[in-house]
Length: 110
Figure 1: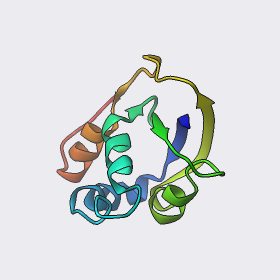
Figure 2: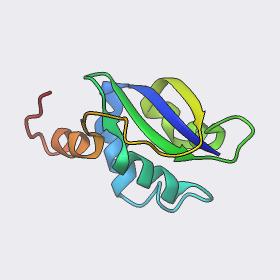
Figure 3: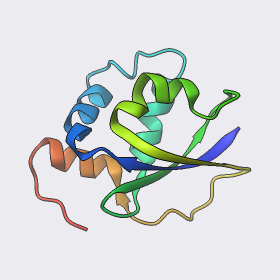
C-alpha cells in the first residue's frame, strides 16, 4: 500500500541520521533498507521542523518495521495517510540536500 507520511524532525539526531543513510548500514537492512534510502532521498522539507514523503509499505501497521529499526530514532509525530497514487503535492526543499548541508556544515535556510 502507498502512504503519504509527515514526520517531525529530531534536530539533534540528524547528523547521525545522514551517517546511517550513507554508510551502508540502512541500505543493507532487509527487507526495507533500499526503500528507506529512496524515501529519504525523495522526502521534502515542508517547514523547518517537518518532512513529507510517499512510501510503499505492506505492514498491517504502516511503517512498523521501518519505524522500529530506523525512523523512530530520528523522526517523531508521524502522520500516515493511505493514498492510491503519488501526487505532485508536496512543496518544499529536498530533505536530502538539507541533511548534506547540515552534515558538511554548509549553511542552509528556508
